[in-house]
Length: 53
Image (cartoon, rainbow, N blue to C red; front, side, top):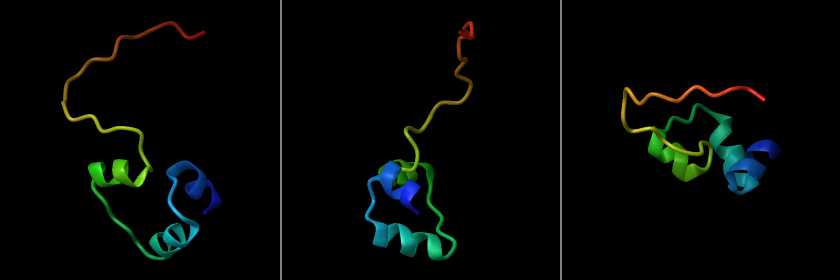
C-alpha cells in the first residue's frame, strides 16, 4: 500500500479501501488516479528503435 500511496499521490485510506476488493477502472481513470503515466490513444504508432546504453 505504501508504494501505491507514494507513486499515485492518493491518501493511504483511499488506497486501502480501493485495494480491499476488486477495483476496475479504464485507462483514463487509471491516469487520473495516478497509477499510469499516460494513455496511448492511437494504434499502430511505431516506436523508433534505439541503441541500448
